[in-house]
Image (cartoon, rainbow, N blue to C red; front, side, top):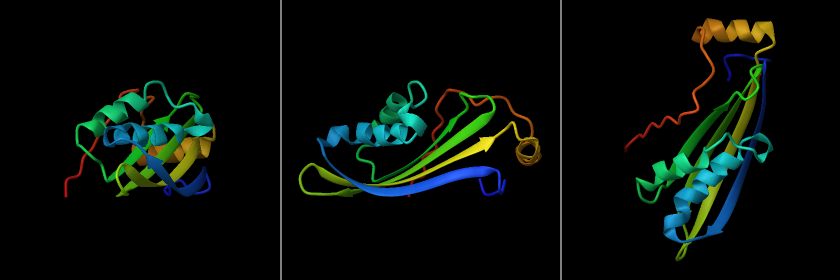
Length: 137
């Protein structure tokens, strides 16, 4: 996002959420936070379930970063990055710190479109399929 200066509109928020839930519901709660970060509260179709299923495979997550690219409007690419950290509480309490970053790239601006093509080449619209990268420590 920093590679296209003056063409990116962005907003950052950080908040701590305290949730009480059974341990098994933690992946669903994290997936819901990621999906709800998408502008207007209308996440792309079926984004919550794949994220929750992915997180469920790895037990109790302590950190998760989620990047959602949304191009429902062909003239704009919306980017939503959610960085989540989970701290154990007492019993089934969890403290979730969420940092949210959203940005938009206006493709109807010829200078922006040209700069993106220069940086990344030509590309088609993003796939609706989720992609995952797991980094083990």
